[in-house]
Image (cartoon, rainbow, N blue to C red; front, side):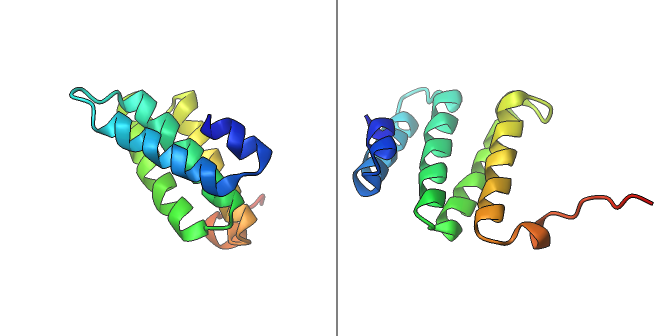
Length: 105
């Protein structure tokens, strides 16, 4: 439901649902870290679209740590989280400061 609201542009209500879903998933007797990471990326992506960059960045950093632990460094899900954070930096016009690409000699 949060995703539908997000797609409709109802960001405030979508954010409430994303936060609620994350809280529920984290409070389970045996939390499913894959589901938790899914809730985290949805929330961080929405916050990026809302231009709440500081909060989105904090979630992305935590998400990347979680996905590295759950999936490993070379997994698709870890890469997607890193790409999403790069998108945040690009959106916030911090891309050139945050990412240094190797120069061709």
